[in-house]
Image (cartoon, rainbow, N blue to C red):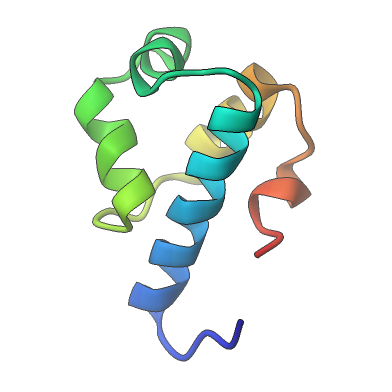
Length: 74
């Protein structure tokens, strides 16, 4: 996939997060609870509406028990 701008990058990241979250058996609600953030924030990240922080990326990788790199493999 060729990514041409920031918006496309955020959408690709979000789609990959959704795929990984589902593969690990997490709902948006469960992931939000484990990360101590609002479920709406998970939804916005997965839709590419917001650019999440590096600290959230780190926390997501720990909760899903994956390498940070996997979140960016799209």
